[in-house]
Length: 335
Image (tube, rainbow, N blue to C red; front, top):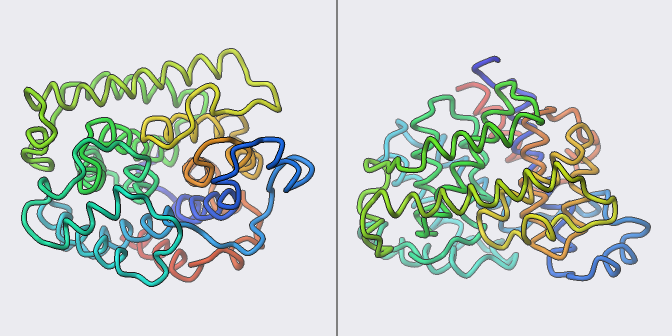
């Protein structure tokens, strides 16, 4: 295993996320598989078309910029840059891509100042917590990666499952860029979740557990890990039994509107065809669930494993925010 992702893997994670977002965005609110296949004959979208992305990519770019702007990877420094980027996104004229209610509410609260723990939407575990965490999967330090992944989720989504799912998403990307083979990934993530079950990152999270109303920090975080372990079990069962080619992955691991299901179903779409990223993104697009977020995560996993070159070369010029994606990729590679 190598300890540093290659420049192709870094670009693959960032561009792959945006590719998935753009390819599946047209089907996000289409809940009939027949309708999707008819609209994008014969089997669903396989091209970026206009390349327009959603709030998923916009917020991923915000997290990436916050990481690069932080003078050091500490809770205080990252909270400051993340808060600033999230508030900038809140007021961006291009923030018109059906952004999530939780993200909007929490960002307005963050703008008012004060402790972030009081700004978060404490009961929300929407997929907005982990459809933007991908850049943190490129951080080599285990404790910083875990703490920062949970912090960026907790700024808007205060439910413990949102934190655990974001941590697992970043961990999955790190494992793939570090050389873990796809067939080992679910077992590795399950072992990680079990090991983290009672680990509360106090320095990163402060008293957010009290805002949620938990009895203790450990009971708070273990609730999140237990829900993630449950969905990882369903993912393992789905992979072991196999999915028919025309099946909806959402029927096995959930529709992806909530954080743990976004992780599991995005992973499922990747793991069904780990060497064919376009097919992984198509599988995510042809679902009744939150297709753009599912494909966004599947694209990040595929890019982490295969690198940028595995995707169609012409997509790079076509996807929205291509120049920003390239700039950030180069900045991460230079760190």
